[in-house]
Amino acid sequence: MTPTALTADQVHARLHELTVVDVRTPGEYASGHLPGAHNVPLDHLGTALPALRTAAGRGDLLVVCASGARSETACRRLAENGVTAATLTGGTTAWIRLGHDVHRPAGTRTPWAMDRQVRLAAGSLVLTGLVAGQRWSAARLLSAGVAGGLVFSALTDTCGMAGILARLPHNRPAATDLDATLAALTG
Image (cartoon, rainbow, N blue to C red; front, side):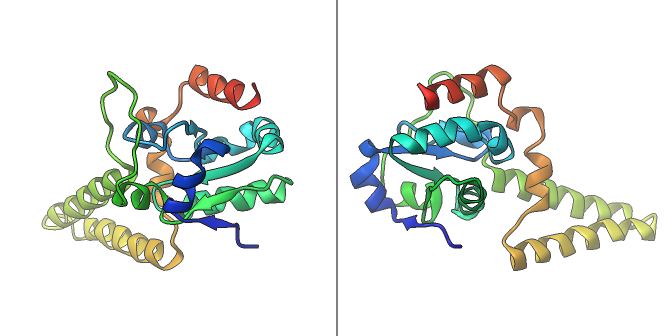
């Protein structure tokens, strides 16, 4: 089942009546999010399910990410658990492109967006494989593996490297942050 999708302009008109859940990593969320959005990283969706069920019972739930792919995945997972949610078409990228306001926590260092982290990691691994391959030909397999992963990522609209990078400390929510978010969703 495909979740309901709302455009950035539709969301902008209804933002005051939506409970917005941003499923990006805390680092991505800190780089700019929809006003009033709550950060529940995609890999913490199961933990947040009771709070999200409560929030959805009070009104419409909107799930957002950078492009719409992760939020669509989140909406499907929520639907499997009896929670109805819509997704933002084009994600925060479309929201920002249309000039809508984003919030950033004051005094917080802006981390890199996940796609930028993936480009750095993939490029570094390919370069390492090529350079090391000058001395050890088997090292070129690293470059080939990353290239294959990028092709697979494009064909399936998934990203295994982003999943791995999301587990790095700067991309993980502090337990107290997640607890505060869940409390706000149920309160």
